[in-house]
Length: 207
Ligand code: HEM
View 1 (tube, rainbow, N blue to C red):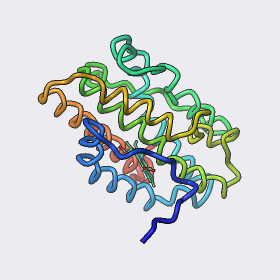
View 2: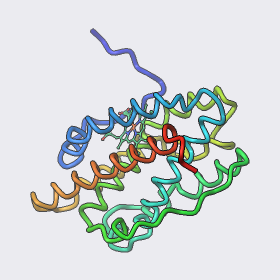
View 3: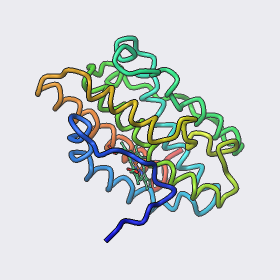
């Protein structure tokens, strides 16, 4: 049976190399995360969407320093300009929400290069799935220019933007041990986001 093309779905090539392993070995944590986010009904109201923005802020405030890392910038093109923390902060302001302090975690600043690559894979990949989230956000009258700026596609399109990143990732020469560290970093990142979802959506004692 022919698959029906979904216009929300970016055209993406079949994964190969390290990217392929990252995708298959983080699938379970990604699915768990999707399930928990949707259980929080992030598009039910702007109040719920604000909780989703706080999750994004928690995660991207940790990952943001990696975008300015000189060694990583030598491996991944246009790295600095890919950081979405500033647009998440603007989205919070659009909705009249206070921008929290950026999280600092010494452990994350001490991540090795392979582990950092795994974290960046998660942050960049989340923009691929963001097509679906942006569509849902439109029902709250949010858009690429108000409240959902960080879900916008890159000017060249999500598919190409993602391919540029994954091709660079696949071109990095890594030992088998370091590849395991990349995958470990990606799974740590997903688990960390899951923790933020639990805290922001489901922990009544969270600030
Ligand atoms: C309810 C929330 C989410 C949904 C429904 C969702 C959905 C999706 C979908 C449909 C794709 C595949 C896009 C495609 O191949 O055309 C995708 C990719 C991805 N998403 Fe999510 N996503 C969600 C949240 C997140 C979050 C919060 C993160 C990380 C912080 C994330 C990380 C990723 C990654 C890394 C990929 C790339 C997978 C690959 O092809 O290697 N997603 N997502």
